[in-house]
Length: 156
Image (cartoon, rainbow, N blue to C red; front, side, top):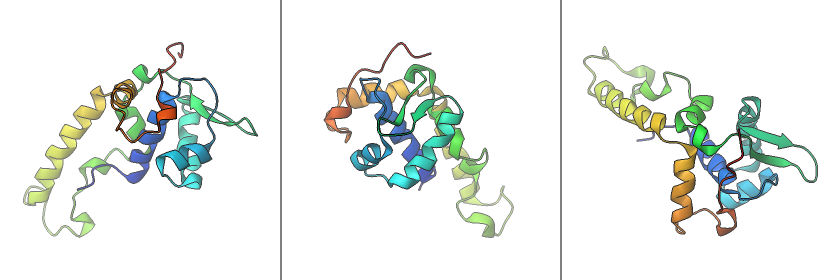
């Protein structure tokens, strides 16, 4: 039962990867995509709104790519997810628009409402720094060992 769109999941993974980078170097989309197993062209489009919001910096050219512009401690998963999820997406009925009855009679509406409430609560209090810590402490996290490092604390 998927609660988040794939674009939100990809964004969380890519931002975690970038936050794990110990250096202040820009990382090309191709490398992020290759190391995380994500589609490269889709990833570039997915990260653009985070540049527009000041979460990431981007640079074109041979030494270009993306890097974090905000401290992971100051970025909640709710903020990340909100970029690609409409406000009502988490609450939509799993039967889709074909749901035959009113919401108060559909058993899936109540289940989805509770799941969405719980998920929203977790997203609100979990920061990107929490994911960085987790991945740093678990070598089996699936993130390439070259990506593991301390997040730069000097970010605004």
